[in-house]
Amino acid sequence: MNWRKCGVVAVLLLAASCGGKKGSPVSQEQFGEQWPLTVPNGRLSCILYTSGRQIVTFIAPDGREYALNGHAKSPGFYPPIDPIHKPDPINPPAKKSLGVLIDKGLKLCPQV
Image 1 (cartoon, one colour):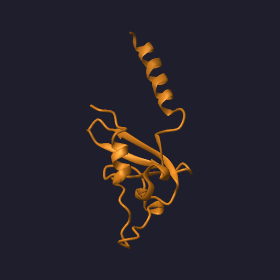
Image 2 (image 1 turned 90 degrees about the vertical axis):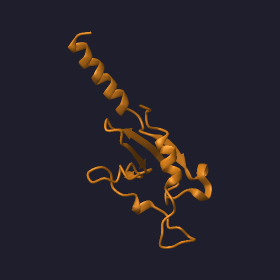
Image 3 (image 1 turned 135 degrees about the vertical axis):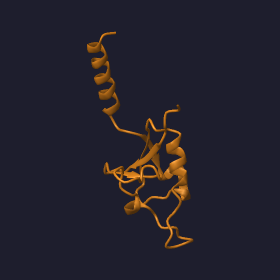
Image 4 (image 1 turned 30 degrees about the horizontal axis):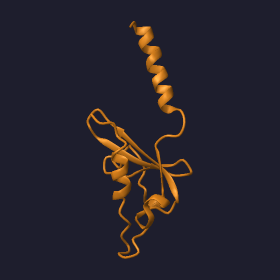
């Protein structure tokens, strides 16, 4: 394969990965009382960096993307999910655990 063909293939793959809605749908219906957010649904996404870091994010219905796990919260990545994170009714002022969403999001990451 020559360089020109490689370039065309790379552009097509990039365009395909950017088209449509990003991530996997999730909703309060799926998680019931464990749902940790104030919005009823959204999408989970996981990006695997070459360093092996897995970045898990939540895309809200309004299109804003928030950090879910520690790697996603690193400076320069995604904003914190605080604006839509539900308080824990049993232990205020703590917030509900994001664990169920992080676990599901990590399963979306490509395996090395």
